[in-house]
Every structure is written in structure tokens, then in C-alpha cells.
Image (tube, rainbow, N blue to C red; front, side, top):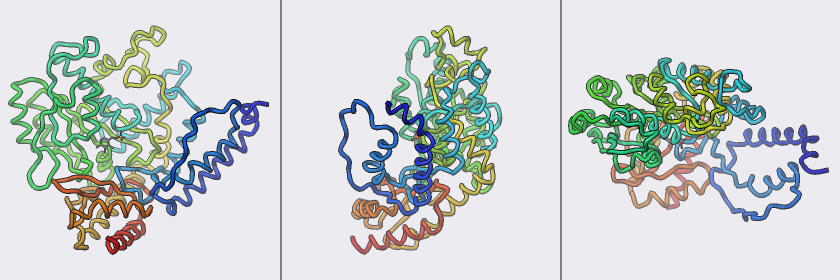
Length: 463
Ligand SMILES: *Cc1c(COP(=O)(O)O)cnc(C)c1O
């Protein structure tokens, strides 16, 4: 009997083992190291017959599992790393088991996009955004920025009397931004818009990363009425600063531009009455990026784009899979493949649908407020210890700090990360080497903050 046939008969045992291992992993995630130790030899030849799922699992457990880090655990504070809620895991497993190719919502052999369209509505509701946005799922905020800026590209072409999607790009497209995320710049490269075509807008005085609206207006006026794309930030990665969206609204009434907001994680400020003021006015953007594998706490790979419905024709012009006659007219038969980069795609919305439905608005308000509270507690520790200093005030969920003696930053961070008790990432801010701690995991508690600060004090004594 071949291995595939045997596995089919042993499906129950295989999945039971996976489930048990998953439970063990998640129940002990607090104890698992955040630092990888050891290495594995790479296998370069595939064996002839295969070894079956049971032996493959044993091999995985022997070679890879012991060195997997607790990146979805409560003390993985590097980058902006979310975890996974129980309901999100359930939805993710089912997305794999049902294995839909999510395209259409019309019942012609596939209705899975109905779930995706509904999930977009639930997210708009979570964020208190109006219903005149069309949205969909992509793999991450990078691809969401790419998708939004691709529609922006088509829009600006039209302003110049061109159809960039058909003709290719020509002329000089102007992009304005103050502190764009690296992935927005990468998207400009991928889109042929040119990463060096960004006109730098000044940031506000006084340790800010938000754009200076007065300077923005000067730079707009220098364009003499040329259309442009504005990339603004709802949460910069270093100091979680937000551009002033109400002020941008005023400019939007006066000048002709596409307004994109990268709200990858900062968009979740909308979940809390305490922090939603940071986003005031964002609902008038032409497009918005939000990551789900960060603060929504669903597994990788998950993010959404929101593009105003009035731009749907531009979106279809950009993404339509038009030379495949059997796929039909994109405007008559809705299919996601005419609205975003991928054609075949997994039911990415299902984990998000599960977690949103399970925990509701209150659940996400609690996660956001608790994470911000943990950031503030950690910042208190930094403030109270003369060996450390904050590089910026804590505006939401990230603490950007340094050592008073900047020369010790790298050694300190390497030792701290090697402890396996916490993982933090280095940064460079305001001309100084720094360290970032980002709080976006629903599991993180005050006792995690306490144990990290204890480890930090210990490492200070070893420098
Ligand atoms: C994380 C992040 C991105 C990129 O997101 P990926 O999910 O890694 O593709 C873009 N913008 C901001 C503000 C982010 O924090």
C-alpha cells in the first residue's frame, strides 16, 4: 500500500496527533524560548517512496520543532508581531480543511467570497468606518499598500489623460509623504512608480513623526495643480505617530490628490473610545491598509485593503484578468480576481470571521486597551531606571527606548534576546540607536512585563 492510501485510512490518528501537539504547544507557549538555538542540516534529496505523514511528523518534531521560537507568545515584542486567538486558529484550520478557491459570491460553483465580503463588513463595523469602502484580503500590509497604490496609480494616470494599466506608465508621478513605512516604498518600486519619486514632507517639530500639514500645503502648491498621491501614516513603527487626518481633510477639499492611509496596526485605535480620536477624519481617505496578522491576532498571512467604492472601475482596470473569456465580464459577475493581485487564493477571511464573531467589539477593545496598558507599564519602568531613556513618548502600544549610554545598546540587546525570555528589535530614531517593544499580542500580561524588566535588570549587571 502506498503512503497516501495509508494516510487516508489513518486520517483520524494523524489529525488527533496534530491537535494534541497544538494544544501542548499553546498551553506551554509562556515557557517556550523566544530565541532560536541550534541549527538543522538541509535535506536536498527527496526520497522515492515518501515516509508517510506519521513519520514525517516525527521528523518535523525531531529536526525543526525544538528550535521553533514562541513568536506567537506573550513576550515576542519585536517588529509588530501579533498572536492567534483560539477562534482564529479554529477558522484557520477550517480554511485549510475546506480548501476553497475564494473568488466569487454568486454561487457558480463557489460562494466562499460571501464570507470574505461579510468579514469586510464586520471589519468596517469594528473600525467604525462608513460602508462606502470595498475591501478584500491579501497576504499582508505590504500587499495591501501595493493594492491600494496600484489603484492610486490608475487614478493618477486618468488625471493625466492616460490608462497606465493598458499603456504602461509614462510621465512623472508625484508622491508626497513624511514617514512612509518601508513597504510603501517597496510597493512604489514594484508598481513602477519609482521609490525615489517621493517628495519628502517635513515632520512636525518636537520629537514627532507626523507630517507637518503647513509644509504639506507648501509642497502641494509647488506642484502647480499637478495631481499627486499622498501616503499618510496611522501609526508609524518607531513611535506610533499619526498624521492629522482632519487637517488633511481640509486640503482634500482644496486640492486634487489620492489619499492613502497606512493604518497597518494603528487602525485598531478605532476599537477604543480612549484612542479613536487619533483616527478622526480617516474615513475620507481613498484607500486604507490594515493588517490582520498584527492586532487582530489571526495567523499569518492576513491583511485587508479598503478602497472607496467610487473607485471600483479604476480597481477593475488595474486588476482585471481580462483575457480569460471563461471568467466573464468583471463588472457583471463579481469575482475577487478582478480586484486584487492574486487569482487563486485561500479563504483568508475565515480566521478573521471566526475571531470577530467570537469576541466582538468588546473583545477587541479589551485587547487594544490591555496592550496599551502593558506598553505604559513598560514605559514606566524605562522612565524610572536611570540606565534607560525613552526616545519618544508612548502614544499607543509601542515603547521606543535606548540606554543612556548609547554604546551599550547593541550588547545589551543581544544579551537580552539571547536570554530567550523576550524578543525585541533594534531601531534608529532621532539620530540614536534604540530598541522597540511593540505590544500587540492578546496574551501579554502584567506578569510578562514584570518578568522582562527583571531580566533586563539582571543583564545590566552583566554589561
Ligand atoms: C507591518 C507594517 C507593514 C507591512 O506589513 P506586512 O504585514 O509585514 O506586509 C506596513 N505598514 C506598517 C505601518 C506596518 O506596521
